[in-house]
Amino acid sequence: MRLVQTVSELRQCLDGLTPPVFVPTMGNLHEGHLALTRQARATGRPVVVSVFVNPLQFGPDEDYARYPRTLAADCALLEREGVELVFAPAVQELYPEPQRFMVQPPLADELCGAFRPGHFAGVCTVVLKLFNLVRPAVAVFGKKDYQQLFLIRAMVRQLNLPIDILAGETVRAADGLALSSRNAYLSPEQRAEAPRLYRVLQWIGARLAAGEADLAELEAAARQSLVAHDWQVDYVSIRSQATLLAPQPHERDLVVLAAARLGQTRLIDNLELSLP
Ligand code: PAF
Image (cartoon, protein in one colour):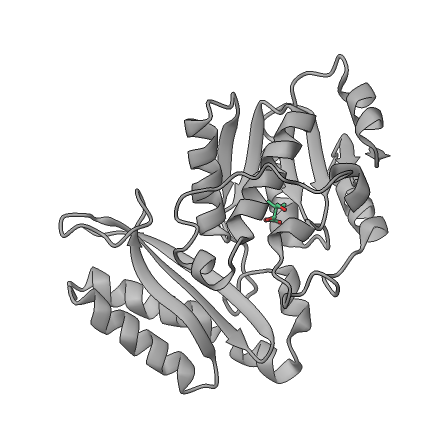
């Protein structure tokens, strides 16, 4: 496995290589990321992983400065997974001048976008830059960041990028908590409380499957049960998988998404469901 940190080294390594499969990450890798690299490897293409904590996607009061940076440990894990190439540029390498051209995605004021202004513009911009540098045939994104995956797919489609996007299932701890680098911020008490987020989504899923049609009431009840356990809830929302907007009455393929904070730690999760 090679670790490269500059664009010119990356270009040299990619020269003559079969168009790779790409897994963009912000590092601090856990089983969720490793599952994505395994899915990438199963395509039979060389696997390129980027490790870059992208300042453009963090708000001024967010955790950019304290986001865990663990490149040596990440590389050791990726080497074991048979990854060919790791691209871990410094901020100055990817943004040698202030980034003025930005991808402005749709739905940027919805769901997480409503609480993280500029976040998805930052994500789409860095992902487009990384796509242009790595020139992958395939890229893999986790379903845990559902809105991100939706927007990357839309960007690839609408900008005619010749890249197949694969979606990786969310990897969960035994108690249901979705794996996330931010779980490391949780105190032991918060960690014990955190699986409630997924349980609430499952409860909504069960009610919808049982024929409950009042979505607003379900969302409100779910929010209430989180608030009762000291969560600060950004949103709990039942959406269409196809549009990520409020579902039409006939829509059966739904996704329940939630974002809420325990103390300073913001957790997100989602549950896809197809009603009979
Ligand atoms: O999902 C992430 O880790 C990041 O948003 C991504 C896609 C690597 C862009 O910085």
